Length: 52
Image (cartoon, rainbow, N blue to C red):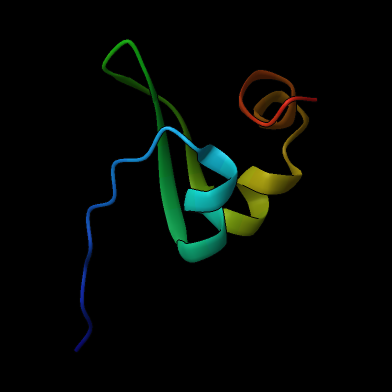
């Protein structure tokens, strides 16, 4: 049906530009999960990972 790609990237903004769905890990634990659009629009993700 489709293809899954596991992308491990320190640049969250770049990773979310190419992903449809993403998981944000912090110290080995998933702290956020959702569509790339939802994560880019999430104020907590913006503050912690995208420079506010």
